[in-house]
Amino acid sequence: MSRLPSAGETIKIEILTERIKLLLGEGLANETPASPFCDARVLDASDEGVTLELPEPIDGLKTGTSLILHYHDDTGLFLLLAKVSRKDTPTTINVQVKGLSEHQRRRDVRRRVCVPVRYKVERDGELGLSLFEWQDSATVDISRGGILLRVSEGVQAGDNLQLEVDLHSGKVQAEGRVTRTERERGTGDLLAGIRFTSIRPQDQEAIEWFVLSETL
Image (cartoon, rainbow, N blue to C red; front, top):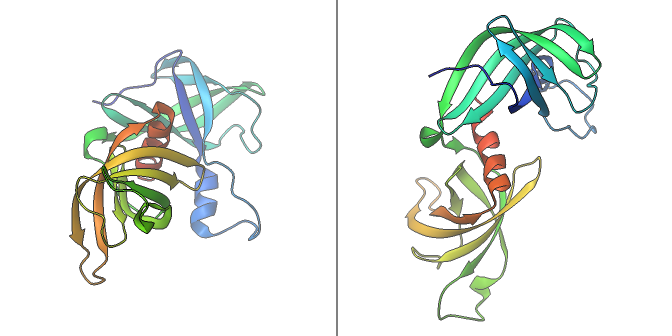
């Protein structure tokens, strides 16, 4: 069920023109990309518009700028298309709702993407093997509940792993358990399905934004 954000809710905003620039490959080659999101607090929301308070002024944010508002609850993520209708102060804007574009249900979403991962295996009763050193790898896909990871030979179902996942905007840490292993078609690489068993709420939220916010 689609819904507007609620007053007092903290959401994330994305300037649509910046997304288009990235898709077109514009910008300086040596420029480090900024985080694609900015936090905002909802002051008021109705069908006529949403008033947002920003933590600081944002360059390029002016009347007529198109935005994507990202916010979520227990059911998943909402993506709301909007346009800045006015700026009351440098950090207070009113946006006109253009339409709810999508509601991504949390339980269904898994993103197929290759991101760097460092992992270390911890297996009860076995110590001192090279298998248990930190190793570099990459994901095959990722969700808020776990990852499918390329692993070295010898990793098996039931193993516990320490994980460090690089989401490009920052690294998150977690512990996970191997639920299954399989061979990748074509490459023969060993893949391990890993369910997160311990992860900080803020790290799980960062993964959720990463997975769900690349849908437009």
